[in-house]
Amino acid sequence: MTRHLLAIDQGTTGSTVLLLATDGRVLGRATKEFPQHFPQPGWVEHAPGEIWESVLSALRAAYAAASETPSECLGIGITNQRETTVLWDRASGVPVHRAIVWQDRRTADRCRALKDEGHEALFRERTGLVLDPYFSGTKIAWILDHVDGARARAEKGELAFGTIDTFLVWKLSAGAAHVTDTSNASRTLLFDLHTRAFSDELCQVLGVPRAVLPKVASSSEVYATTKGVPGLPDGLPIAGIAGDQQSALFGQTCFAEGDAKCTYGTGAFLLVNTGERIVPSKNGLVTTVAWTLGGKTHYALEGSSFIAGAAVQWLRDGLGLIGKSAEVEALAASVPSSDGVVFVPALSGLGAPYWDPDARGVISGLTRGTTKAHLARATLEGVAFSVADLGRAMEADMGSRIARLRVDGGASENGLLMQFQADVLDVTIDRPANVETTALGAAYLAGLAVGAFDGLDAVRKAHKVARTFTPSMSEPDRKAHLARWADGVRRTRSS
Image 1: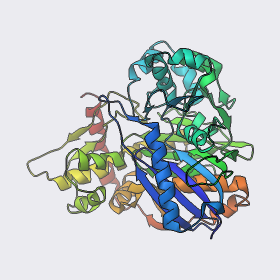
Image 2: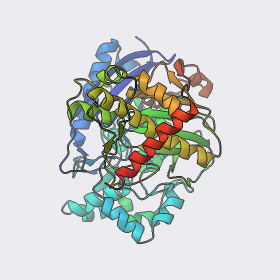
Image 3: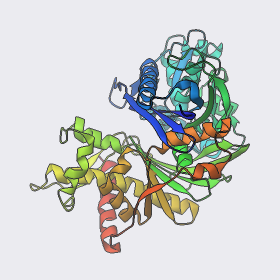
Image 4: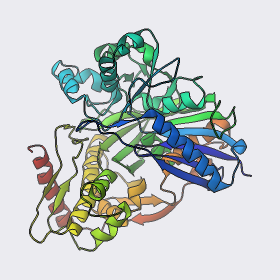
């Protein structure tokens, strides 16, 4: 039996459990999907009970695949879809409503009203975020205002709010801990980056009672121990928490100022470590906590594209052009170019740097000669263009070029996408041997807390680059591609 760390990566479409030896070897891994609920156009919900069952199922499967025993687990790290919002009864643990997912746009009108009331500058300065339905604060208020009696119960302290990390710690510890870390707290619209605490003023503006909020802790410490979890012994330390994108930044060992990574999952998320400096964005990005470790908080600039892998899922499920998501690369590679077809995948509005919740996806440049292969290629290119927009905004905010970009997430295994990304962003890309760096980051944070690693140098030794993509596109071709993309983006905002 091998001493190991257990990482729970609770994502938007599934939950992954990774068992990691202290030398970096993956001992076992399992993923279990769970249902998505779409009550209305623009609304996206999860059932918290289904999330919890997917975690338990993945735990069982990972240990079965590894032939390891949970008694050898040194500690548990959690990483999670960040802004997804749950409120539950403190006494029973029963949620009062389905979780409202980060992609959900139902509070767009409320965000517009807050802007019209002149609150945008306050939230920008205090939280580093924009007033957008993406973040948790307006989701909390919506549940309190639409579930009978919820607001009164919240003000009495009977309800608890959490992003998914908080919900999982509560479940793993049988309700012993109501806690989050600074990286997740910084995604709520309620957390002041400068004081590193929830703000009474911001809570009042959004109508969120302080009584529902969790304790804010660092990203690497023992928050609680397991109790009553099927398949796990009692007493295992729950010792690492980070939001999924910050966890991936940590898992990619982007520990130095200027280090950047992009995760290609349901959406695409580009982050650059700004060290202990809070760098306000003037180019449509957000400023966020990267992690708090050893008493020091690192910050990051982040750009989020809401649709990446989800665009390929749409080709599969919505249009039926492919049977499996993995088929998209071969189909796209069967043609030498998109033949002028441009797909702007604004299927849930536009995220950074535009922040337009009313934008809609656009496919332009169609001819009688357009085939499903051209559409598949345009879909991959659309993902890369979206990330290129983020990269240019980030370079403008930092005042320097991105030297190298580390990539991860399921879609980063698509070689055609990664080469096109290197070309349109004009940057060298490194893809690691293990692209599940989100889970790795959670495991590393937990390992540091329980002494499995004696410092960041020990963590760096586990990181290995498997493939590098070097830009090969000419500057005139790059400019022509970007001009077509800019025209496509303009169309999404006038549709």
